[in-house]
Length: 375
Ligand SMILES: *Cc1c(COP(=O)(O)O)cnc(C)c1O
Image 1 (tube, rainbow, N blue to C red):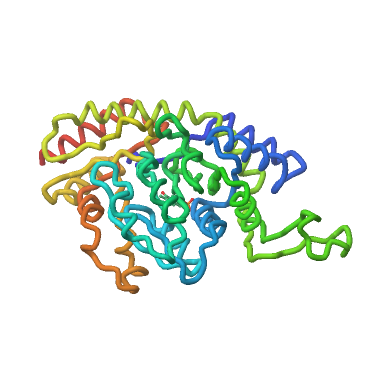
Image 2: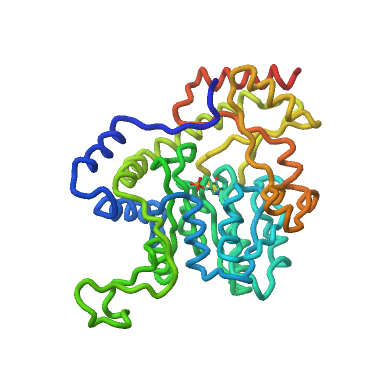
């Protein structure tokens, strides 16, 4: 079975990890600093904080934004559920708004109406790698005094009007899970252009420890002294995993090129096939394609999905709308509330998309899709 996604780990990645294992630091050491610096160089953010997962990055991002009990977060249902639940972990209420039909990203036209005086954050997701519509969203968050958080679990390496993801929103979060565009096994990061948000993110992921004598309330305690001023957790990504992440980051340009080739081969091989709709991209973005979301029309998604699996093609569905999860159902969210996202979910199949996919594999997938759709 061809999987729908998998990591690409080569000898350079293995050597980088082994080198750290032979050294003095297993966790918070020079490789954490080097990885965060490399993420800053790539994303154009002034501060990046590495952490243990994309979910942790979201939790840290919302905490840094000051999200707490009674606050509201406006977000999209077309995402992995962590975009929403990580805000709920801080006591926030989630307000979903529907997505746009071409990109499946949060619809800026619906965002402003969902904002109340309790809204702290508007959180968009760069679905499949396609950046959110920043130039429409930013004026709304600026006007309403809210912060824009971009869940870029799919899109490290994408650009919007020539600007890199990581430099577009108040807070950007990445995931380095193995199926994503680059991996550190488990891992993630928070990126920001705001020094204060960056420092708050750093402290939240570091148990809340304050070590700067200038900021201490009791600086004369002794040389061992450190203080906690606000609640934090331990979300530190160790040197060993930062070594893998840093090595993978050096390969990101090659990863992006290969993903673009795979995307283009699917577009060509599936062009003109009736009963499906192919993904599109807006002119002003340059995405790194994390997913290839094919839409199967006329209520035939399940049939085509099963046929592909039976034909050795490990397809996936991304995603069941977040508000369909029982955790939201139990709070009163209902099916039918977000028709664009829900219709898309009913049609979507993610075709295999990963760097190690060979041209012959892609052609096999294309043939299998033709067979399955023609019935
Ligand atoms: C993968 C993913 C996450 C969570 O990342 P983990 O590293 O798996 O915790 C969050 N949001 C989106 C959109 C994702 O795809």
